[in-house]
Amino acid sequence: MSMNEYTEIKSPEELEQFLHEKVTFHDGMLKEMQIINRGYVMENKSMNMDHRFDAKMLFQTQWDPVAFEIVCIGINHLNATGPEEFMGSSGKFIDSPEQLIELSLDGDFIIQCKQLFYKITPELHGNNEHLGSQVPSTNMVLAVKLDENWRQCSECSNAWEVSPAIEIATCPSCNKVTCTGNT
Image (cartoon, rainbow, N blue to C red; front, side):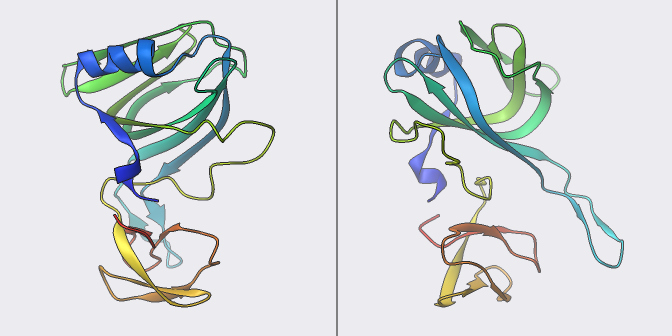
């Protein structure tokens, strides 16, 4: 897993193509959503102030491609009202005071973020938990597998124990999101 597997939306034209040619939210639903704050409180009660919400979402629809993921980096605003079926979508780029991308589903689910990525995942249909344990990041670093349950961060050289089934994990020492694959 790496961010190379995702396509970044960088312009209003790409957003329009995504919403009306690549996927459809019509007769669709938000199946899963993971949201993470990149800041945290340490055991000694000091706080890492790298506050930023990132999210990964899985949508399923009754139309091809059936399922797709969205990754939102640097969320500025999120409004979600309920787990209803979506009928339509719209999107726009907002340039004040910083550039944000807004995705609106039926006007009830609205998310504004600094970066928006997507990946077509038609195999992720059905009533399973598909998304895993971590939200990918645009600045992931490599983690080297040392043996079955241990990995080492390429940023700070810290080693820690992680289940081999988990591909993306946050280094407990330097807070970098790490990936065992190509970043």
